[in-house]
Image (tube, rainbow, N blue to C red; front, side, top):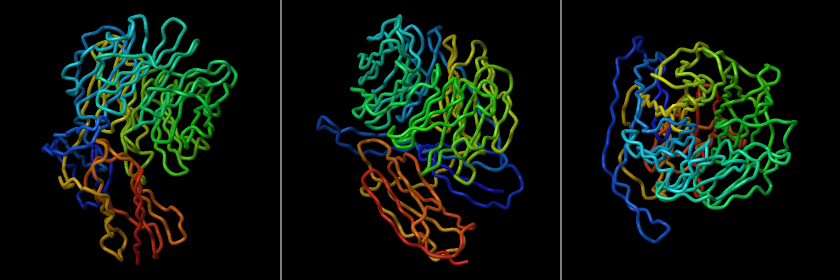
Length: 482
């Protein structure tokens, strides 16, 4: 039995071979402890983060599905259109029709309607994103014939319009650090793509030209941006994408499959690769080679797949993720790793689903057209293999053992930086400098991490491993001898 350990926040996986032939009866263990540290902020003061919750899961080849979806009280009955979980513990944002914006700071125990503080009631909001800081958020909608983007930096105490476009409709928006993108339906023969480099205060479409093909248009929430990679779906069998922050664009097509509507999507992007899941009118599609080949499964019931969430697995298991989807009914569907079958994992008491979160791997909200909110902390088992020590500086340790056959352990330290997670990459290269494995490519909280590399499928020889962040890079050499 293969055993994988993963940090909920860091998504670093470690693989173990376990001789067990039985299924563990497991329960969730959450370890909470207090860590106080100070980070200098823009106004010259300091921000204290006093609580850090580390939770982990063990995922086995035999899966238990003890997850519990619960209903939460929104105190509204209007249609909710989009939901996103914040990087800040306990926080999430929802937007909907009639200017509704909901925010929670306690995992949904309470939701506050904060859109009334500056967003007119005749604006239907289609998409929402957390911002850079705790109180930041961006949401976009349509008022009459004008698309409008609203921004708050004070947890919704006030909202201000930062972008307007006559005749448009914004379908997706996302902020990562200082940068972010908005994607909307074509206006004047070109797709409406805008970029910010200052946390959503200003937006510019210069250099982001993607021409409209015939009369194609987009879908609400069929959009994703993650540190350099951007993608959005259309009703013309195309998923447009860029892997260099919008400098160059291409597209995958599903026309050969007879699927025109790409109504939801998710991707995992690595160097020169993009593994993409697409939800369509009748299928869920998956590709590992930019759409040259597709695998497909058929969910239950009918209607567009309006929300899709894939839970991460190690690189060697990509394509076998756990999947959740929602269609415009009251069912949440689930697909087990490696399976082609779908099952209904939850049925809401009323209303039809419109969206499900896909920006946190083990926590999900799903929203409905009657104000309904469903929540799941989808954890199978908990364990904490990482120290509570918070490093002061970056550090990459020598792998152990070295020489090794066939597995070795690599440890590294990520210090506190601006009170936010850091985008970290750990890549293995052969003696000729060719990338052979990417162990880490994700945001990590400050801490000490350990990841195994299994070189069973590689020849003996010298290899190099490089740790890279936005302002640090270090490499070390190791030797594998079979």
